[in-house]
Length: 114
Image (cartoon, rainbow, N blue to C red):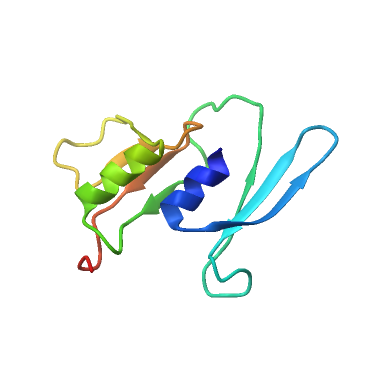
């Protein structure tokens, strides 16, 4: 489910998947063009341990083909939820969590919508 969410957010596809006898699932997602391009891939590993505190990695995303409000609607429809981490009321970003509670920020669009 998490891989499906991040593929939707980033317009990525599943590139590889490994399952082992202990139920560990490793899924690698990346650009539609596959391995070897300029874009990085992301490896997601299922972890049964509950999240405690802030994660050591925090992703910021920004839309490149729509404005921030439209992107917020799209992310909420994909399964993200808004999170309040005491960000200032005048913040230009939104803090969200993916379906497993991992926080990320939605920044303003850096490009004019197409």
